Image (cartoon, rainbow, N blue to C red):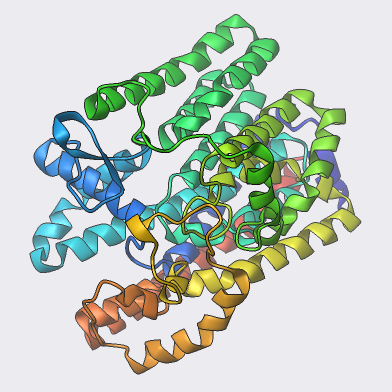
Amino acid sequence: MAATEIELCSDYARTMSPVRAVERRLAIWLFVASASVMLVLHNGGLSGLDGETYYQAARSFVDQGRLDVGPGFNSTTGVGGREYAKSNLGLPLLAGVIYFLSAPLGRMSPEHAYFIRTALVGASMTFVSAAIISAVYLLARRLGALPSSALIVGIGAVAGTFLLPYSKEFFPEPLSALGFVIAAERALAGRPTAAGAGLALAVLARPQSLLLVPVFLLVIFSREGIGAAVRAAGPLGASVVLTAAYNVARFGDPLMFGYPDEGFTMPLLDGARILLLDPSKSLLLFAPIAALFPSGFVRLWHKDRFALVLIASSFVATFVVAAVWHNPNGGWCWGPRLLIPGVVPSIAALGPWVDKPRNRRLAIGLFVLGFAVSVPAMVISTQIQQLDVPPPAGGVWLADAGLPTIVRQAEIVPQTIRYTFRHLYERNEDGRNYLRYLTFWQFGLARVFGRSGLLAAMAVSVVLILIAAWAATRCRLTYGALGRHN
């Protein structure tokens, strides 16, 4: 490693302000480059029932001032006998902001308003995923990783794991993971209010995140004192109040999240077996880098035990909660979706461990393997294997049901490519059309608007690629500036 890099990793928390400013610029350009690339690759819509439900909740509130979603969605009967979306209000809130801001576009083309607005809501997850890359980079640097190592784990956290296809889905787990990473990095930086805001984001995305509140507050109190813990509790208190109010408005109970007939009934060892050994859900298959987590945790034990408590507790709590949930597989989805909030911060913990050349080569190899595993789920729908099997009664996939597998996903890619180009402009309204095509918004635009839509898609894609290349160049220049500020 270059001497400047090695010196820069020394006590990053107390580096001079010019270096911190350069780090922030690098994180911003990394975000722009990542978001631009993922926008090129997005599917341009909401492909799953959960995403459609969150969108409908946002639409209902913005247009009618109501919280219910109507029948036919992933909902539960609540106040007034109406149907309400399950889980917390994080994603409905995100969808609501985008739905409100996109109103002018909907009015410009009323016949295509649904297509446009669902595309924009769905695309918001690319920005969440890009933010994860930058946030993991900053957390790895906060832990003492070299800049190059922090870049490896930051990019690898998304591109080298099963999180990659979730940049094209609309699930709450990536948003919760982003909140955890922000909370951990800001807590270690001595910024308790921002740490509380990060954890509040995780709570709004997934209510299970409330389990981590005592841990984070205890660490902040131990490091900074009672005043810092109180400041961190401010945003957290706001998220708890919003959560309780949302639950009361929907179900008349502050502790009711919309799962009356579901619960934590799976034996822990059985759930752990599914999450670690089942070929359709194994964390080690969908995120091979997870095999190195113990190494990252051991290093933190020797270097920064507060950081270990924050990150390891996020992983352990996420894993245990998912394992004892009645359906650890998370329904029909790519890989162990419910583990995402714990996996992402743990990858950041590997940053300092990756500083050694041998460890770096191993980590890069595992990230490349993880990328290869998830690429087929990027180019075709993660739900395409539903064409192979009839849906279960009630639409609920059992914990031990056959779910999308890595090998079958790869097998379907060639035939999907052929079908896409043979039926480029064909529109089939049977509700399963998106399963038959490559899942890129450019092809969707061609099916909706014909040849002119395809030309417009190509033009926009070129612009996004140019923005990504420009941002990547700025990343490289900013990275070089880190040495000059040593």
